[in-house]
Image (tube, rainbow, N blue to C red; front, top):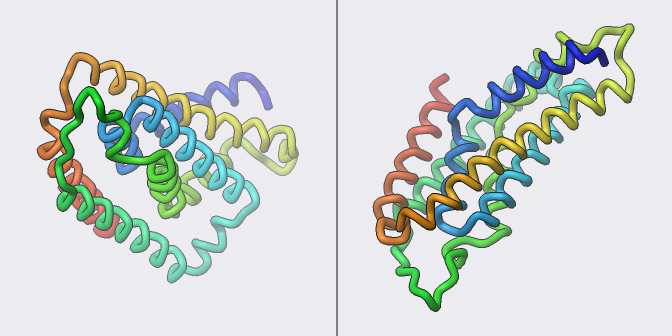
Length: 205
């Protein structure tokens, strides 16, 4: 894969990762409710899931989604339902006061962080369509090979992980200066509304 083509791919992936959406909301949620390490786990999990979609796109599995619209709709509404589930959970969660004897990460778990982030990516079939369209610009019959495909998948996954890890670090450092725990109830309610709004946006686009 030529350097110029790879740099173009990097630019597109960075812009895509930086665009606000459900994934960003999930990482922020676990970083605030838990800790910096929870945010990093969420970032890595999301990046791995995105990488799987990139592999699926290269293998042509996304074509099956396009060929069977019902499957696509099931995945879309499945993702929306998961967002609604997270929104409901945030709106109905009970406020926990974090004291010096209470770990900052007790409001969430590493498993939850990994599960929620991976689910948000996996239940988003638009990623497969996006990667199919994107990779078609960089792979031709003459250049399609395992080496080029591996580079593209690794690029997509690593950029996604790095971007959301940066977000987690920023929020993690900000937590030392901003007492998020004092406003946990408000944050939960706002997060819940955001997830519900994102769910409605998913099914109406």
